[in-house]
Length: 299
Image (cartoon, rainbow, N blue to C red):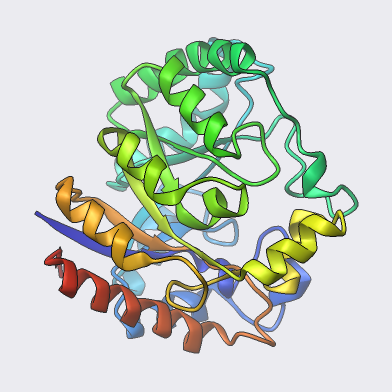
């Protein structure tokens, strides 16, 4: 079994904070990511939106599509409305051989609202999450039947943020609802990274290696700052630059025969953390922990 290493272009091109990365281009992101050694990239909003255009664009940089964000509204939509809304992206990702769509509920998230503290994110009860999970399963089954794995992204500021939320979502959903396991979001949300990974390893389909700086996270929480404020302040960073034990995470992935993508997603201020330098640092850390774990990396 082997894994592949990809990256989100968010360090060079932040869709939520475009002014933060105005000095960088998507072309630079793909060129530099490939030079470092990454073989895949998640889709960014400043890439071509049509399928043929996106394929040609990625081919230019000899890099694969290794997933991409899908803004979901299942909480407020019925399944038919939701599947119609995401059909184009699902069909595009099937055509381009993506390993999954990375789906997150965005109907009431506060992640993109800089004037709303992340502490004020919407919180559902267990019964409400279980009901949502049942509804979400219909969408996931439809996506899976079209040939595209469905990986749910627990995310800061959203209804599925902390460890309980993830547990309830997995408990209440069908096997078609896979997990995009994100180390940084889970720890920022107060969750136990290893306990969650070990509990739901059979549902993990896609992995984000995202590190955090705990002192920044603590300051954001204590002062009721927003998710976007947290990004600007440096709450997130590449693996090996924060506090998460990625050797333990990688050892667990090896033990469960994980064979998907490991994707670096580390948005921060490029003036403080130059994207090339930090992305290279993250890549080299992944090479190191995979080597020690005996987890083979595919070319």
